[in-house]
Length: 206
Image 1 (spheres, rainbow, N blue to C red):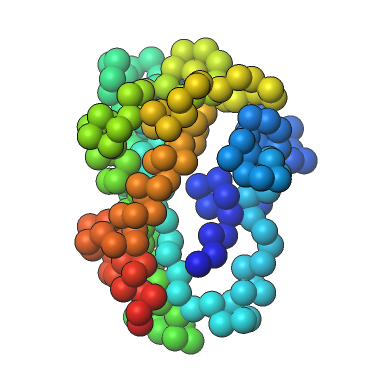
Image 2 (image 1 turned 180 degrees about the horizontal axis):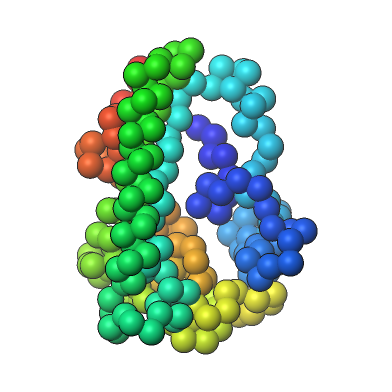
């Protein structure tokens, strides 16, 4: 299995943009042997397609209205609640992404198979019942500055929380590795509500 990217499977990087949204410094990359790279894509998508890659999982967008950055910046959200209008926009996008998956599968695209990973609902499950999944903190980042540790994302050499596996969010925007493991398991063996129309295990057997 190839994951095309390493920051919620985004493509590209922000290393050369005038932006605070970068990941090419510590403590990013804390769990990777080579440390932070800042790269969100290895540039090999076309190459591995030419080598025969035909099975794709298109991950939906998670509930952006629940991330620490939105919780910190919203003036209309009650404590403990997500920003509804932001999540409504995400739901609209994901609905269209599901339609695209259906369209791509109907066109048979040289034998390619596409599935949709429902990260939105999986994440909402975690947010609504974090203790069920072993999390203690679901409304602020493990590494960041300001309200909900979400006003400014993790800065160079900023010391993260001691128990990052107990946090839902790593920084102002991204889930922790512990959350991503839950995503991966649900996409691998979950029902169609988690991964549509087939999960990764079923896809691998096709």
